[in-house]
Length: 345
Image (cartoon, rainbow, N blue to C red; front, side, top):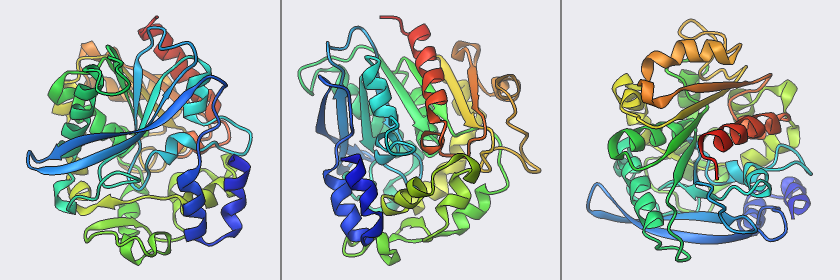
């Protein structure tokens, strides 16, 4: 199926999106993947649905924690399901092969999840929605399985949501925080300038995206998210065809998630990971070279409590979207090692 999806690059974006919607990840034999939905409320009143793909490895959980996967702005569960090139594993397939259960969710307002009013989607309300999902998973509401250990795995804005959730509710066991630092790279500001209403974008033709829903201007994603020397032109093109949305409510509250008071309230182990050439968070006048794990720890540790036991990893040559760079499996391996050490079966 992955070859079929890559073949859609020559089709219209609407046709490619239709094929993408029916695609399932290539996972090891015996892995059980199923679509799940979680009813949640936003701001205490508005009902919404959070959609996700739950993948359980062959042989059961084996004591491993469930990873809840949270993608960044203008991404959804596809970030965790796509490989960096045909024949390579996605995050989900890599983890399934190593006995790690995953739940790749579409944050509210993205993918197959509901489309609440844009101003209701903030870092705080999304963190609360994730908290509600965690509660349902721990209670055995899905598949009759009580997930006793949960790790939030975030990327970019997904990491922001994960940090706010853990700092507020203290209901998870660890965080893998990728694509996020307490600094600003040279392309972060211009990225938000290159957003426009999703309703005007060819990718969402006929989908009636609500007011306040935004996405990247066509043809701009590769320059912000990828390092061209470490990526496939095909996957960057597919990224455009499967891109998602963000909202004005999120855009207005993203800076609040970088408040050191939030990360210092996180009292579970944190694994920081960033691409060496991530121009959203590394380099420029207000950041620093992401040259090594030790440099990341030195910069970031003051923003976390001792309970976070901060560790770090830098993916060589990578841009912002570490999962979609050619050497993504190096980062997958580093994260797996951290998970095995922090959460032995």
